[in-house]
Each structure stands twice: as C-alpha cells, then as structure tokens.
Amino acid sequence: MTAKIKGLKCRECGSEYKAEAFHVCEFCFGPLEVDYDYEAIGTRLSRESIQAGPFSLWRYVDLLPVEGIPTVGNSVGMTPLVHAKNLGRKLGLNHLYIKNDTVNHPTLSFKDRVVSVAISRAVEFGFKTVACASTGNLANSVSAHAAEAGLGCYVFIPSDLEAGKILGNLIYNPTVLAVNGNYDDVNRLCSEIASEYPWAFVNINVRPYYAEGSKTLAYETAEQLGWQAPDHVVVPMASGSLYTKIKKGLNEFTKLGIIDAKPTRMHGAQATGCSPIAAAFAEGRDFVHPVKPDTIAKSLAIGNPADGYYALKTAAESDGRMGHVSDPEIVEGIKLLAECEGIFAETAGGVTIGTLKKLAATGTFHKDDVVVAYITGNGLKTQEAVRDHVGAPVQISASLSGFEEKFKLEDKGKRLSIQA
Amino acid sequence: MAVTVRIPAPLRKLTDGQGDVTADGATVAQMVESLEKNHPGLKERLCDDSGSIRPFVNIYVNDEDIRFLKGPDTALNEGDSVSIVPAIAGG
Image (cartoon, rainbow over all chains, first blue to last red; front, side, top):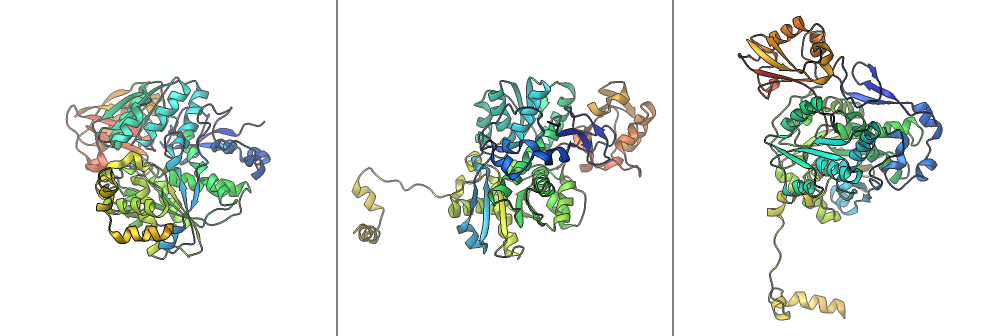
C-alpha cells in the first residue's frame, strides 16, 4: 500500500519537513500540517470501504495521520447525530441536528478524537511519556488514553478548573500539575517544557497529528446525514482548531468524491468573556488581539487562540458568522438543550446553543436548511456552572400522606383519570 | 540593558543549541537587533519583511505577553527575562 503521509508542510510558507514530532516551521514559525497523498488515498477510499471499517473514528483511518494499525482509542467516536425536533421547533428549524460528543468514549468530550490519534502516533514515534496543556477535557482524555497505552503521563492545567475536570484526571493516576495562572500561561509554560523534555505533548510537538482527529466530527456528520454535508454548522471556538478542521474534513470528503460539493456555511461560537476571534470578525480584522479570559466557559478560555487567523479565513470563505454569548446566556443555553432534547452539555455546549439561538433569531437559516450544532463536552464535568440555576428536589417523608401533602388534589385526579 | 532570552527549540540551530542567550536593548525591538548581531538569521525568523513581529511568534517579558504591554516598543530593564514562544493550539 502506498504511504498516505508525504510529510509535514508549513501552512504559511510551504516549507516541507519529514513526518516527525515537530510542529513549528523553522523558517517562519508558521504551524505545520500533515501533507497527504490524496491521489493514493483516493484509489482506496469509498463509502463502502468506510462502512466496512470499525464502528469508531478509525473507519476513517485512510484520512488520519497514523502509519500502522492504531494502538489506542479503539472505541472513540461514532457518537449520535440527534435530530433535535423540539429545539428545532422552538428555533424554527425543521432539520436541526446535535452532534452529541457528550457521550464520546472514554472521557465524554470530543478530545477523545484528537487524543486517540495523537497518542497512537506518539507510540509510533516511540515516546514513553505523553503530556498536554489543557483547559480540562484534553487532560482527562490524555490521562485516560495514557493509562490504556501504559505510558507515563503529565498533564498541566490552570489551578482554578472545575472539580469534575480535576478528579477526571486524578482517577487515572497521571501526574497532574495545577499551574497558578490561566490557560495561556499553562500553554506557554508547556511550550517551554516541551523544548527541554523528550515527551509527546499532544497539543505541542505532536500537534500536527493531534489536530487532524477533529476532522472525524465532519466525516461522521456527513456519513450520518446519508453522505451529505450540512448547509450550516455551529462550532464552539477556543483556539479555533476544531472549527477549521471541521471545514477541512468536509473539503476532503468533497475532493475525494465521498460527498457532493455543497457550500456549508461555517458559524463559530465564543463566550463573550473570551471572544477574541468573534471580536476580530465583528471588526473586520483578519488578525486576533489576545485577551485575558473571564468566563464560566473555561474549556473555551483561550485568550491567545493560535488558529484564530485561520478561523477568520474559514468564516470569510464560507460566508459564516461568528457570535458570542454572556455567562447567563451560556447557562440558559445548557438548560434549553437539556429541557428540549435530554442532552446535558458542558459550558461550551451552552455557548454553542446560545449562539445558535442568536443566529436563528437574526435570520441566518432557512427553515428547511440542515443545521448541525456541535456539542463537544459533558455537563456532569461543569456542574458548578448550573448548580444554582436548576431548582431543588422536593423533600418529602417516606409515606403516601407525606407525598400528597406536597401535591394538590387536582393533580391526583388527573392521574387517576389517566389510569382509568 | 542586558536581558536573558529563552530561545525555543526550533530556533536553537541559530544559537549553537543554546536555550538561554543574553542580549542588549532598551526595548524589545532593540533586543531583536542585538540577537541578530550575535546570531545572524534570527531576525528574519522573528520578523516579517516589514520588520513587524510575525503573527505566529509570541514574545513575553517577565511572563507577560508584549501585546498586553507596548508591543515591540515595550521597555526592557536590566536583568529582565524574555521568552520567545511559538503559537500553540488546542485546549
């Protein structure tokens, strides 16, 4: 079989490198990206070959940057694409879908996709230790996959993360380093550490491979829609990487003839308290001014988004919009999705739903457009955000009279008449 | 002003493999010129043709991003510690 990976290539100046654990162009500091041999891939990839593959993201292995048989994350991906009829009715959309990565295996966020690719690749490179800089979900996934692969593991997180995300690391017994600072501080520290230690930092020196895992959200969406691209997507943005990779995934499927060409409009969502990409979009800039994040959406709290420039380009090319929502709107978004569809999203999901709602209200969609909203993480990990906004249990004694004290007779009457 | 500059791995070919070098200058822009004098080739890696710092290069003075200070005009004091860090993604 012809190799599918030609090497790495700088997105800015086009300089070419071998496919090694290396992420920055030595010449212009631009980010490196995997350079595929699409001609070779095209000769063997088809809808049939994909469907004959495993029920996981590895059914798309021909378009993922591992050379051999993937070694970790055999059950990652193929999460539900839910037709959100109730939420759609509220927003005036007949074909609204939720791509539900709140139930991704094993750590309940889309990060399981990128990490299974990054660590499979790190194992191919011969690394014995993996690491990451994380806002939480990534650290959870790296910790779990390192356990599965039997690798050493160091995860670096801001010290003020949600309790669920801290425990969600410790249970796998990695070394957890809580850094006194925000994510951008953690990121910078890790970049310096990565220069000194022979570790696979999944989102630093292994980043070109890692980031490709996000494309599988686009592949799965297209396959689950019956081999077609949506008319619109709404994607949460932190660094902007996921947003640009969903576009790349759709482009690759189109180029390889897996789906018909369709001008999918790419919409990005940020929290108002950390919206450097949305602010640049609103002001018509093609570059991002970094900000100091202040939002409950901690998983999106990246003030210096490395892929912001490419995200702005993707929005411009696809006639996309970028929106942002306040902390109260994030909580409302989480509750709206839960109450309408029975899906409990984390704060990033509240950002996506809040932005979707705003886009719908401003006439961005036609009622029969196929709209896909990406829900990338699970609400059980960010309980602090909604704890004071969800009411409380009704306390009763363990007796029928205790129960009936709390309910009016007409309630009882209704139930009896239903039973009769 | 003599300052210490941390050089990231991708640029160490230009500093004989050294991770820390010293440089002079009253501002970040002057420090870049000083780096170029001692390690020819560094400036064009850090700055584009117009002399502006490239978009994928982050420079920190005593742990603060210079974009929150005065950019290339940020003043340097004796003994300051400067870090050059490539942009990174993901969270």
